[in-house]
Image (tube, rainbow, N blue to C red; front, top):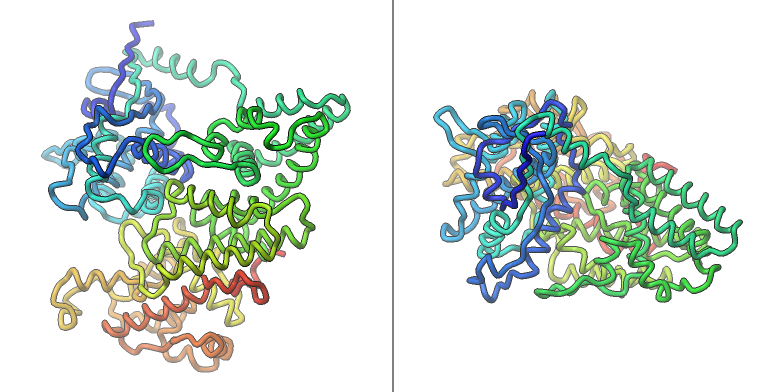
Length: 623
């Protein structure tokens, strides 16, 4: 083996050298939304530990550092092939591109131009990316330019790049001031560090990779928690049955992914037992909620008396009664997250929105003492609350990222849900939503931009599905929510991108673009139909709209004839649907107000009070 070099490098140092490539045995870019969210939350949380908005002049040397692990490369000449670490490097590249776009909306004095040099070198023949992978470069260039990229027919890596970049629009905190964003960019470049391990031979590099990833069988936190619990059960028969029960549930969790068991223990323990959370002020220390997220096995051991683990029987019941009960409910939530389930439809919607804290909230409201009717109703009410809460925040451009929501989620768990009766849960969540609606509401239309494409798509899917179900038709949410592949649905602009057709109504092109992207000017159409309409005028599109889903059909006057279900829906809910022979600025504004009313109706706090508990329940929900 030749010499192996290891260097402690900042991200700026790491990305300032020769471009990176990847070796043939590297897997596709496979990070999921949750992995990207964890990275962003960790970076942002660590930055906030020492960033003081009252002292923006604080130097980087006085601020915290963040270690992002190691990267193994094989170096031959000017080529640096990544042997281990490409998932993190790829995700960081996406984040740097996203941060560069965020700068477009801030004052020139706060912009960090150097960030671009970490993403690409500009050559006479175009961009040369620091992560230079041929099959991905077209996609990366489109993202860099702020353009939409169609990944159809491309590799899994390319499709995932587009998905994860779209996720950043929802994941990244939306309330960073200009000076904080500027310092955050510098902090990432100079205070985030990695160990670069360099081998000068491909064989040596792969040996290092193999050794780091395959040698040894370290125990997971779940393994250690299991051992601790079993060691405290004295009866051999009970210990044996407990061992079998834990293994049974771990097998069930594994069906949903290798990290599901850890997610369950974090959600269960936080929901039932966390009494504190790290304060949001600078330098605050981790508390129960935070510690459970990083070392739940140790937390249980150190807090055994606080959670009622004193005798051998307590340890047995902790698994046989409590873990079994919450494990079953968690499995129900996992299934409802993938398939709309009667009364738990909102669990699917919240999962599609990427809200990973919903299981914490739902589990916190239930108790092993609840009968089946009570715990099922509590779960449904909390899921509906989350659905209304998330959409209310989105319509007012409020972040729903983990880092922004976790403190508030904890306070809701502690003050409104844990240990409460069904009536208290209903009333507490209703009051919480009503209080929030005094400050934020559904009165102002949202718009499409490079950061809202995914949630806007979900909004349109919900509107279309809801109106269809209310009209007595099967709601096709599961179809509308698909964003890639042959059966994908795409956001259709009612106005084609031709400013020249609207110059009489708009003095400036930017004003036209802003109106064109308002939600009232948008529909969902199948990918094939959307492509065929493309640059057509509204009058040319209108006959095709009549053949599509209900939101598109409602633009055509013929749809209002011989359609009693739709007419009854309009009357029952006082919805201002109307046909449009042409679609000018005033028509778009009226259509936007229609969508505002739909949003206020679908996500009304009144759905939490019982009776017709949710107008969203439909015939396609699984019983």
